[in-house]
Length: 416
Image (tube, rainbow, N blue to C red):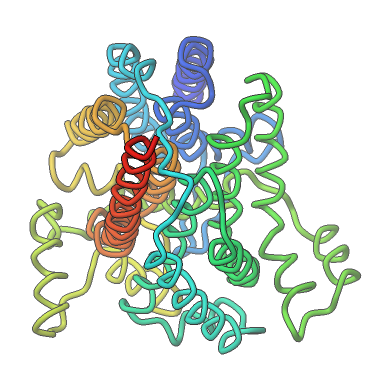
């Protein structure tokens, strides 16, 4: 009976996905986030359907995730509540997505912003040289909140520069080239996702939605083997292309193993025993705890830090789960409330955002995907704050540039 219900949930969610693609298209926040959440919700079931894996062992304290278990059905049902609410809200708000349009800044960029980009390029180059050849564990050992904020500010600035300008000068070219190289050697999969989103929103207008959908399996394969490629080919002590080929042959591919398994396993285990009593109403308490620790110190641990300590003895970080955090705040109404909040946020983006529309689409979509596997406070601190910094700097300098351009245009007309 459990397996039958899981089949039913999968079929309903897949039908809703197809309808969203047909009604809203692929280049749409509502559609893209539904695809991402659907993948995280059904990756384990895809392993069962396509690869025949009916149970998967998570490295998080050896949690067994099985499509036959009741805890899997509970977790699947929570995602179902979220996706169904999200689906109907997306259909209700679809009219707003048609009013959205790309509004680029002026072709002439402020000299001050060019100078800022050159300074930031120097910092990025120094950071790249200092960390060149290090693997993820070595990179993580030297990270601080400030370094993470600067790193993400560099990324979001790059998104604004790449998608928010009609023309580029030498400063933007230098900045983007250094940023691409830095991200290529970052041992993270996020740059692959960002590149895909930039292409999708900025450069894919000539492609039909059906063609774009064909890129999704390619993207999954790239994400599956990118870290192996880095550690063997790009890593200074790697074994080269031969090592990469050997690793591919020895790796058992898994849809869930690419990323969703860790957060889905936490959600399943939550229904066996709740270890998060101290994080009730975490949207408030976790915000207060982390903010207090940031300014005044203390021993408070974020939800992800506590989970890592419990499941891995603090040996490495693990992904959290937005559905699980919604349960900690609103019980089984959590997924429904979360879906309503996110769809209304997207509606606001489409209704209000006329300036830098495409950069904002890329950034909001990227942050949304990060939210699926991260607690809210970490998203605010590490993602939203850098995005706001990048936005205000870009807007400040380009607003000044626009005024200069407007004044110049007025003087030219006066002369005529």
